[in-house]
Each structure stands twice: as C-alpha cells, then as structure tokens.
Length: 158
Length: 369
Image (cartoon, rainbow over all chains, first blue to last red; front, side):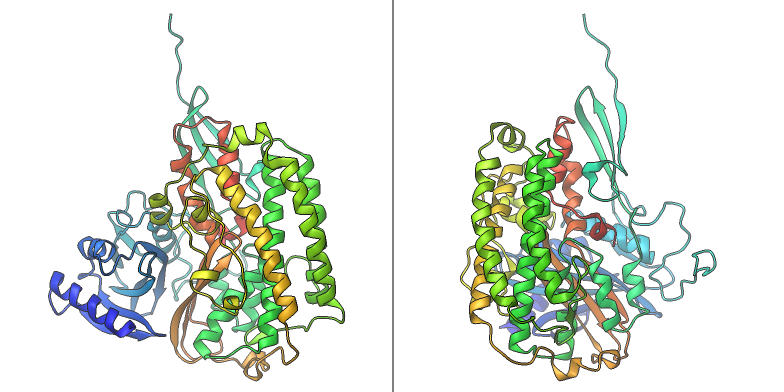
C-alpha cells in the first residue's frame, strides 16, 4: 500500500519535473520518504502534491530545519485528511547559503514554521511575505540551532 | 458634520491577564474596530530544542513537561513514543493503560483550566472557582501516581516510572463519578447564559478550509466541522480498545469550540472509566528502558504525532545512534494554532479580541518553547 503510494508520488514528480530530481526515495517506518535538492523543489511541485486527486496532501503537519554540518535540510511532513496518507519530503540546501522556496502560498501554516526555521537555523525562505525573527529578539546575533553556534557562558549566567 | 477619526496603535500585553503567559499583541484600531493585528511571541523562549541536543534521551523528558504545562502527560508521551518508535520497543500493557488514564485525566484538567479562565476573561468570575475545584481533584490523583501536580516527569522511554499506588484505580473511578455529576452544573451555570452566548456565537469564525490550510488541530479543527481526532483516526497506544465519540460542531465560532471542549471532557471520562476496568497486572517498563542513561536508538529519523488537549503535538527526532539526539523538533499545537489569530481579528470589535484569543486555548510555554 505504502509502496504503491510512493510509486505514484515518484511518477507524478517525474511527469512534472523530469526523472533526475529525486535523490533518494524509500519507505521510512512504512511512510513514503523522498529527498531532493532545493534547486528542484518548487511551488509548482508543492501545488501538485496538494491538488492532485490521488495525493491531496492538504495538511502540513510539521516543518523542520536540520543542520547536518555539511549541508542543511528542510523537512516537510505532509498528511492528506481525505485520503489518510503521509509523505515526508527532505529538501537539501547548501550550508553556505541555505535557501529554500517558501511554501506559505500553498500551506498557510508554513508561515510561522518557516520564520522559526529562519530564526533558529538561518535558512532563507524565498517568497515569504514576512521573513523576520519570531522567537528571538530582532537584534539577536547568530542562529542557535546551528551546530557551530557558540555562546558566552558567562553572559548567560552559567 | 463628520467627526475626524484616525488609527491608533494599542499595545496589549505582554503582561495582560488574558494572555495566559507572556504574549503581546499590537493592534491598530479605528474607533473600536481592529484594522490590523500583529502577535508578538518569544517572551518565554527557553531554547528547548537546543537543550535537547545536549542531553541524553531520558534527560530530556522533564523538559517536555514545561512546554504545555497544563497537559504535561501528553508531552511526556509524545516524546517517549517517538523514541520508542525509533527503537521499536513495545510498551508493556499495564504501562499503556496507566498512560492512557493519566493522559485523559490530564486532558480534562487542561480543558477545565481553559473553561474557567475563558469565562474569567470574558467577565464571569464564579465558573473559575468551579473549574479549579474539579481540576484540583484530578491533580490530586496525578500527584498520587507521579509525585507532582503539574510537571510530572512520569513517563519513561519504554513505559512509566511508577506503578499505581494501592487503591488508586478505585479512587480514580470515584473521581470520575464525582466529575460527571459536577459537569452537569457547568451547563446550567454557563452554556445557556444569554450574555455568554451573545459574546461567543458568530464570533471568531473559522471555515473548514481555513482550519486545514492553517494547520489547526484539536478542538479548533473539530469546532469547524472536521471530524478528525488522532485518537480515533490513527489510534496510537491502545485507543482502539475504547468506545468514545469525537464531538464536532459545524459553526466554526467561539461557541462551537466551547461546546466541543465541554463534550470532550465527558468523552475522556468514558475512556478513563473503561481503561480502569480493563487494566491488567504486569510490568510497567520495558527492559530496554531500564538503563535509562544508556539508551541508544539506532540511527534514523521519524515523526510521531498524537492528540494533546490543544491539538496535534508532534516530535521529529533525528538520531545518529548516540546517547544524545542529533535534533529534536517539537511541533507545538499552540504555536500553530495562534498563527491564525491576526486574520481572525481583522475588522472585529476590540471587545472581541479576548473572546477570540481565549477560544483558541493557547499556552505560551508551548508557543515559545
């Protein structure tokens, strides 16, 4: 069942953007899981995932940013309310200039999730209407969830 | 003759009593009508996700208590379960039952706090006393089993920390009876009250489509007519063994959300009752979970979600096969649910601000993480 869904998703993406965009695909805990580069990930594809009658991923559960030291990733956990199915997409982006498109026009809930990822990891979401810090102060320096983030223990009272 | 008016910026919070924590909202008002609202959050940010990377898997459990401190049992649960999923641990049956009982009791306690404070916010003082009387009975039960009233630190990866003390199950059943009787008072006290209905009906409308698109969950989603409850739709733990309803309302306004929460408390009582009847003897912690400082989930990553009192709480955890997690992302329902606030307030009367914000049931400890 999940394998079938994964095949459908891969086919739809291939029809839309050609065969080379998927870097890796597998079932992770029995859920479709695909990896691609930020150059391949675009609004058209996101819109297709949401609108296609066999996919209908209308609910963005979670958006996670991860610093992998040599690159960064944005992870989307999608769910379809109607068809009761999951999809996890990982989008890789270079660490020197982490930049991913904003999916806020497709799933409004991404608005604050993206601001949080920008705030804590410094990932830029192009096309976001208001990409500002959300949890930390506006004049905060650095992005704490980056693995090389250092802080002054004395200043923090430690 | 026309009177000259101009927009005024009004700053509410961060210390306003209705903000239930530290929340600030900047509103631009024209007369009494809100033209633009900008929520400002982050005052309670403690860097919980960053702290997780420096702690062992088990050490992080008490930190989850401090996200949504009204509903800490579910926070414990969602984190432990995500790790259990990575490690493929099966939790002993008795532990599952204990987990369900405490989680449902905690859900009622959380809804009670909401019920009392919501009415307090919009001007009714006495319901608060009723709600806290009943909530305290529940907290006594939770205190007896976990040793704490709010920050429980009760669950462990692979089970729970303490077994139920002698006679505790019977006490819980007694509490359920008392609560069921008391809940009847709630309707007579509040539900039909004309002022309350006038302040909440037709206020803060959220459509079905908006609710899904904004990622809303929990009573807000169900108040907008979407019958979706993770306990029912994706039964985790042992929720498939219980008979309970998922209440929904079509109206999508503050009153609909009120009704959904009130009904949910009654359904939770049913679950607690059934769990107390079905519970069996046995182990309470999987043997893999006993050496708590040595836990090493295999390398991998997963997302696990479950139904908290405020909505979908989720954990995305990345493991490198070491004793500390590489990355823990917490999907906090309050953080996501409060996003829609600015849109809801647009062109509404300033007096509706508190009624709308309160109906979202937000806990700032969770919003700010």
